[in-house]
Length: 296
Image 1 (cartoon, rainbow, N blue to C red):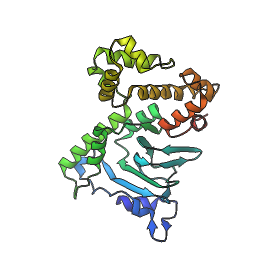
Image 2: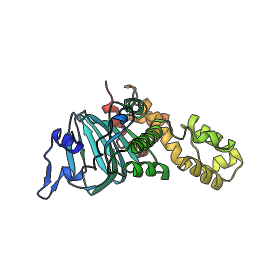
Image 3: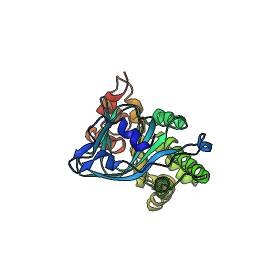
Image 4: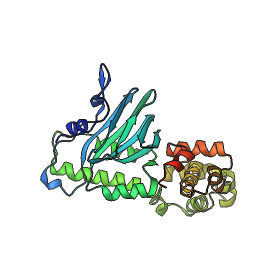
């Protein structure tokens, strides 16, 4: 079945958003039918750059594919059961379309890439992603990541053998970047002082750190450290530290005995308001909502 017909067949919400605007008008372009020789390759059912605005909204279930939404600007919401994730810029949402869920905007506009991926060949990446991040991760919008999305959303008139192989490579690169711990490969080529700087933040994330302290410890200008760290890891050093803290906080919050305040304190954020703000920035939800969404 063609993807658009398949999507509408499983749509639970009303297709008409307004008298002149329907949910089907916001579906990404579908890929041509795949040749038989592509059965063993990662492949797309539909993909596109989505430019939406309120009241964009749909609810769907039993869609036999996986879905990626990568937000560029504005904001959206993913909701299933009692889980509600806010999709802000640089959030990478990876979900199973067979689970009943809602996608919508609460206000203003929302611009994002959307990929619908054939499920059977992609389950390894999906399981690894969920095991590491849940359904939502922050993936910096580097030129490399944006180029992968851009190329995957260029829909050919028909799928040739070459198209299939290229898409398989692009999807493999994108999913590998999403699954691996941040910055795993960059450290292999980092100079010793940047590796030491990163090691300090990875292992002593609960301590207070500043660029001035790193300058004194490593004997290198803080401006040089900041510039080179950003160039290599595609994120400023203190933003990397915050992301590292949030990774650890998510692990701590899985313990029912640990409160939001205690999780923040253990990762070096004793100001609970500040901790909640940073947690929401990097996960799309609050620590309390994240904790409540975990299976009991």
